[in-house]
Structure formats: C-alpha cells, structure tokens
Amino acid sequence: MTEFNDFLKRHETWRPLIIALSIIFIIAISHKIYWETTTETNPGEIWDGQTFSIVDPGESENQIWRIKFEQEVNDEIIFKGVLETSPRNEVYQNFTTGGFIESEGLVYTEDLYGKTMLNVDGMRILVNGNLSGEFFESEIVTIRAHLVENTTTFQNGPNDVTLIREGWEAEPEDIQLASDTDYYFFGTEVLILLFGTYLCLKNMKHLRNQLNLIWHLAKFEFNSGMRSSRMVILGLFFSLFIIGIGWVLGDMQDADPETSFFVESGNHALLQFCFFTFFVVSLAAIAVSVDSFHKERQTNTLNMLLARPITRESIVIGKALGLTMVVGVPAFVAQLIGLYLMILEGDIPAISGILAFLLFGQIMIFTMVTFQFCFAVAARSGTDVVIYGLGAWLLFAIVWNLLVYAISFAIGIELTEGFETNPEYQTLASHLGLFNPGYVYQFAVGLLTHRTIAIDMGGIPGWLVLLALVLWPLTCLRASTWLFKREMKG
Image 1: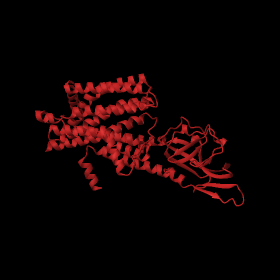
Image 2: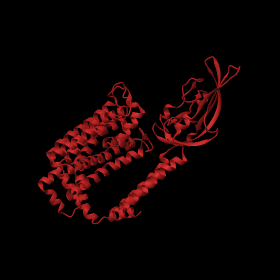
Image 3: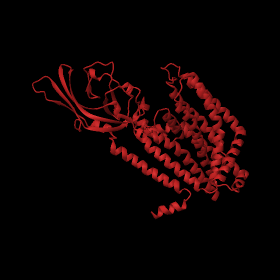
Image 4: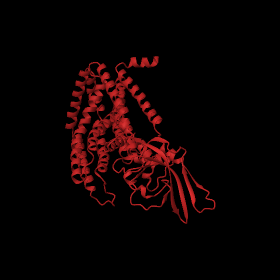
C-alpha cells in the first residue's frame, strides 16, 4: 500500500486517471463475474454431455431410443453464447416429416413448422417462434431455456422407433442480446473514465496555455505539410486511388455472383474500402512523419522550440495533430467522394458504418503518425527512419497475412483448400489482427455496421475491438512522448 501511495505522489497530476482506471478494472472483473454466476457461459459443454441409448426392445420389433441430459426435466438455465448460424436459415419450413436428425436430436414433425432451431456455441435450443430478422449470426445472446421431454414414433428402415427425447426449448421473449446488460457496465466505465480524465486535465498546470501552444504548433505543421511537394504528390496519388476504389467497389456489386469480383452488399464493400484506404493512407502518414524530428535536429529548430514554455508532451501532440490533418483532410475528402461513387453504383451501407469509416479513418491516421514518431525520435539517421517506417508499413499492409499463415502452420493448423473458413484459423487471425492497426480499423468499422456491440468477430467480442481502437493511438502517443523526453534528457 505504501508503494502505491508513493507512486500516486510521484504522478500527482495523473492520480485521478490512475484511480479511474483502477475502478474500471474492478468493474470489468465484476462484469465477468456477473456473467459467470448468472448464466451458463459454456452451452456446448451441456450439449456434449447428452447421452443416446437404445433400450432393448425384447421380443418386440419396436425399438426405443432415448436422448437424455444430465439435468432434470423442467430444469431452467439461462445460456449465454454466440449464434453460430443465422436464425433466418434455421426456421423449419419446406421439409419432409418423419426423418430423424441426429445433429439436432429430434424427429421432423408437422408441429415444427414456423419454429427456429438456434445454434448457440454448439448448443441446440428449439425456439417456439420464427426469429427471422430478430437476431443474426455471430451475435452474443442470452436465452432462458427449459428442459422438456417428449415422445415421437417414426420409421427407421424396416423398424418402428419410439424416440423418448429430452431437449431444450425457449420462447421468443426469453431471448435477449447480451448488450442489453453490457451497456450498463460499459456506460458506467465510460463515465468514470471521462470524469477521471476531466479531473486529470484540471490538475494540469497552465493547461490553457499548453493547449494554445499545441494548436499553434499543429497549424504550423499543417500549413508546412500542405505546401510541401511531397504531400502534393502523395495527396494526389492516394486521393485518386481512394476515389477509384470507391467507384470500382460500387460497380462490383452488379458483377456476376459466380465471379471472384462480386461484392455481395454495400456493407461488404465498405469493409473492403477500409482495407484499401488503410493501404495507401497509412503509407502517406508514415511518409509525412519520417523527418518530423530528424529535420529539425539538423536545422536546429528543435532547440528553438524547446526554448519556449512548452512541454515535451505538448510538442509531440501538436506535431502529431498537425501531420494527422495534413493526411487526414485530403483523405476525408477522397473518402467522401469515393463513398458517393460507391453508393451511386451499388447499395447504401449502414449509416453507422459510414460514420465509423470516416471517423475511425482519422484515428487510424493519427495512430500511424504517432507510431512513426517512435522511429523518428529513436533512429540515429534519416536513412534509418525511412527503413523502419517502410518496414512497418510493409508488415501491416502486405506481409501480415503471410505472418498469420506461418504462425498457423507452426501451431498445426492445416492450410489446405478452404482453410480461411476453418474456425481455428479465423480465431487466430482475429486475435492477431488486434496487433495490426489496419485490421483494428477494419474490425471497428465492421462492428459499427451491425446494430450492437454484442457480436463475436472470429473469437473477438465487440468491446475488445473498440478497446483496441482506443489503446493503439494512446499507446503510440505515450511511447513516442517517452522516447522524445528521454532523447532530450540525453
């Protein structure tokens, strides 16, 4: 406890934020405990625990099959899990009665018409209603289900079979999105974080003066950057590229569905648009940030800047904001034009997805600028800065998939035909994607095209994607600031 108090004294300015983050951590643990204690978070385990047996019919030709669970009939459990299939594809209609379906553990009878068989993390739950359009694949839901027993007779080849079946059933009103509860926890955490940040800013000395200096430095960097020949060429290149990609993605929505150039929807096109935007804009962000500190060391303007009453943090933030605007403003305009052409030729994506595409694009640019700052400060020569920056861009934009393939092969995932749909590969690729700002950008836009954050993206919950979107720029900014302060002390 004494060490913690000493730590708070050394970081008095940041004390409110440190306390806020500690409270948020406690709430996050409570959030996890709440779900673990109030719901069954591993539905597949209960499904796998069922037993199937054939009762000895004796002299009778009528066989008796029994499906039984470890739980007792009429037991009620609230399950929490991910919908592995879309409910609209699981509504019983247009089927032949009388057949036994082993994977679902029931016999097709007429009373199934209009009902829905949900697949929740491998657990089959029969819902007495049509859920088409109510819930969607990969959404995280809670289901209050109860165990029932029924008897059905059907023909199995030459034998008559009586199936005594136990199965889990639920009513449509017993199904809810997990986010209906998650929003209370997340909302509380956001409010605490905002309050802690407010108190932290309030404790900072000469805050208004530092903000003015940051803004003046940002405007200087913006004006200088927009007039540079490098940015004119880069801006023209990536703007035309983004606009052209938007037009192509719109046109591809009218292509032959059997071809590899077909884009199935406006939302799908928007996700592809994210990748191509990151591909060119991240390179531009790195390019304009390459000599952000090295050039000023050579011209001695950095010492002049340090002589002013401005903190090291303010210098890094001001330069980062200015260079972000240098790339962000033309990129934003190009994105708008590209979106217009895409929508003109194809479908309209979700409005929330469009807003995320534009807003998160600026966060992505800021992330790449501050990421390059780490190299710009630490590198000993201009050549090193260029090599490091170009290497980082090649890793994130081009080599990343090869890296994922190599790791998949190393841990034993078979890279045979169609391996991209392998759940193990998808889970690995999604988790590794959190370490790539381009993938985080694409994940976040994909998340906002859905109606809720209660969705699973290849093993990654929606809230974790948003957390990664926030942590990437903050981590890069903190690292570049620390390196800059250490460099100035040295």
